[in-house]
Amino acid sequence: MQKLIIEGSRELRGEIRIQGAKNSILPIMAATLLCDEECIIYNCPDILDVKTTIEILQYLGRSTTFEDSVLTVKPGNLKKSDIPEFLMRKMRSSIVFLGALISKTGKAEVTLPGGCELGPRPIDMHLSGFKQLGVRINENHGKIECSVIKRIKGAEIMLPFPSVGTTENIMLAAVSCEEVTTIRNAAREPEIVDLANFLNKMGASIDGAGESTITIKGCKKFNSASHKIIPDRIVAITYLCAAAITGSRLVIKGIPKNFINSVIPLFEETGCLIKFFDEKNLQIYSPERLQSVKTVRTMPYPGFPTDVQAPVMAMLTTAFGTSVFVETIFGSRYKHVDELARLGANIKTEGSVAIVDGVKNLSGANVSATDLRGAAALVIAALAAEGVTIISNIGYLKRGYEKMEDNLRSLGAVIKQSM
Ligand code: UD1
Image (cartoon, rainbow, N blue to C red; front, side):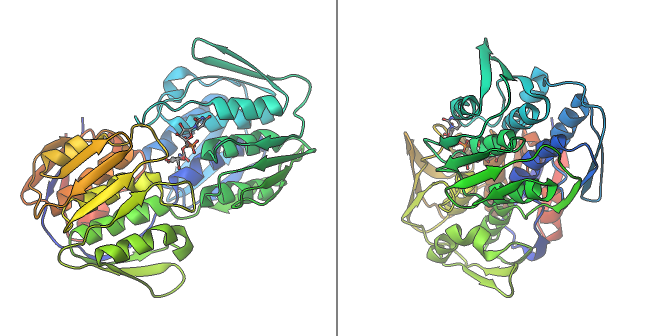
């Protein structure tokens, strides 16, 4: 089991370029199944979840190459329409293969997906959307079998909540149908727009992605396409947190302002200054000690992203004053709190609320990552802590962060990996 060893309490200096977005590349890789020609994806992040998704594509009969951030998915005989349990369990987003398989083969057989331990993660909205498109669903002891009764039919689908995965799955399933499907109360994340752009390059006509109503007019034959994945806003915000807690000045390259608009006021409240010197490049200046913030409430996009709740909480553990968090998206996303406490943080939780009383210093300790973004939170806290922190279970980190250890080392952090 790999560990990260960090000697904290050092300023970071330099610049960093942001990797491609994990939450874009995964559904786009599933979308490549639709096409029987070659697809080339640029800016593909080198992370564990991409490797797992490559395994799924290969299991289904596609061949792939992945080198220097370029992923090529080659045509091949699509032999299967099931995904084995060991692959489904490796990550939650394996569920988007359901929509792609339904479109491509008219059937799909999967087990319930795995993913981060954020509380129960049902897929009822995904299945309800498929049913409205004319898919028959048979659920049996955690196995889900989908089959298209006659053909996928266009539908008006109103989501009870703007679920990211559900919006993507419905887009992927509806895109092989030439009738129009409308999704209302759709998720509006930039990653949804990226998926729509990719599907449109392959021949679909999807309008409204990035807004609450998306219309999908599909097609029967999909062309080969090449596409550059958008930058990862969650990774960019993670590095902003690392800079802020260590009182550092960093240049962060390749992140458009509108991707991080929802967090800029929060960083300003802490006393940081984020200055964009052109469209996609920024510099953050941080004070010696941050100020606390009043309330951080996670919301669907364009609100404050739940995926940075843990990194931002870590950043505020040493702020002056009390910060309050309200987690509204996931039922159990405070598993990092006990680990941050081992480093000296003072955090109390009750249900969906966490109250962080800033302490002057954190000190190094042995901690264990509990999920992907919780792992990033521990790295952020360790960078500021006095002494040595050893973080175990860093496999979680590698699911979503490309070369984080090398990147931080290049910024002056003292960090190494050990078994
Ligand atoms: C995606 C992101 C994840 C992010 C989350 C919320 C990917 C690969 N993952 O996850 O990083 O944290 O959006 O921004 O893009 N829900 C149901 N029934 C369903 C589907 C969802 O009750 O059928 C609930 C979930 O349990 C959760 C909420 O809706 O409480 C939001 O989930 P959703 O937006 O679907 O998140 P994911 O697509 O799983």
